[in-house]
Length: 262
Length: 258
Ligand SMILES: Nc1ncnc2c1ncn2[C@@H]1O[C@H](COP(=O)(O)OP(=O)(O)O)[C@@H](O)[C@H]1O
Ligand SMILES: [Mg+2]
Image 1: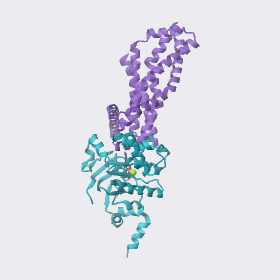
Image 2: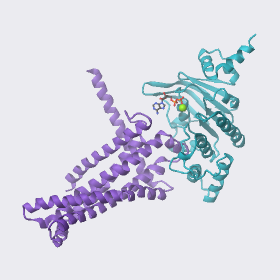
Image 3: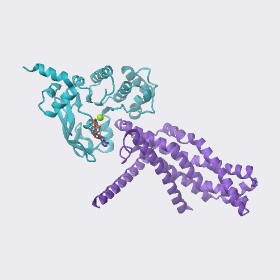
Image 4: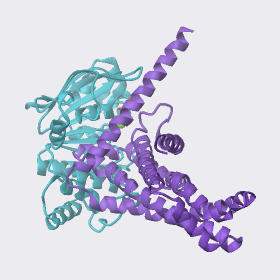
């Protein structure tokens, strides 16, 4: 019994330590924005890796998500005789929920995992120590550019997701089924208000922070995360953990933000 | 011996329940070569990381140029680190940068030299270390020995006062090891740095050493010369000598006996 309480205590302390570490990590990453020299080249390169290279994935995910929404929406709305509302149904689902959430999840899988593994490998092969020994701040040099690139990329990708998704819904509802093309867009214009768009934008920024924070942070601390193990195995475990944690965090915060802001 | 540039005073360090250093004392004289030897896992790399302030001791003081490195704020620590050049066990080159960019990194980040000056300096060092023509390659395309030479080139860029080498020749064939040691001798004569070498290359490495520190069981013992080690009566040191130096040294000792 005593042993069990002790274990519980130990585990609690570990979790608090981990949260503290991650909190400090976030502060140092953000503080890196103000440090000179600013690494514009690195931010651009990372934006290409995280953002531009995710375009194809986002395009296909968005197109098919939009088409499914179009189909499902059509059959549901037809029951009430209001197929004309399809445009606004598709647009609202995308702008408020699916656009930000699915974009962030896709970026986590594609770029977040890669960032985590990259930094984990750099930690294990002493590259981060080497930077510190050269008196180069690893945050300013390495982590902050990834933060900025992700925070730039995810909102833009979300916008692309929404636009492509809305056209996917159009293809399914208007081209393949029999919704009136004029009704699709005019319904949308009438029902989508600024508040919906703001909610989507806030979500995409918050998700971007979560993804880059969790993914780079897990890689950075690969050597102290309990149960991760060492070497290549440690990196692979921590990468899996980063993807799972980011995905859960995105969904939890999606609920919280919707509840608070809607 | 000259004034010590690095001094450990009763340093203790544990990881969880594992006690790696249990009260370590030694002094490293300026401008000389100190070799740290000892079996694998005895805390040699940990000792180097403590010197660099990458790890903090649980107990004791680590004086670098007269100041305790564990009690410095981040700015002072950065300044203190400028005095060091480090060659890590695995060279620790940044994978995403070419050989040229790796060597140029400390100059670009820490000095105000123009691009042309950086280029000139880097190319000169690369040439001196026999790396000319490889500047556009990436670390993954290099052999182990080349990586270490690139690591050495990078460490030398800011003209360090103290060079730390962690197992610079592990994994290299004997010929390549000799080459690396030759490089140490040449660069040390040229730059006059204090050199601390962690090495398994025993007894070869002892030819380079002004003093030898042997680590084992959480303690460190300093010997003024390689000969002292062979004369030591401490059973653990004798064991270490027997295991690492093998028969050559033992038999030589036998010969000396009447
Ligand atoms: N960051 C760390 N966390 C936990 N244990 C460590 C860490 N660094 C080193 N150790 C442990 O300390 C011991 C000494 O390591 P090290 O100094 O690397 O040995 P070596 O003398 O071979 O260089 C090893 O048992 C190693 O597992
Ligand atoms: Mg070691």
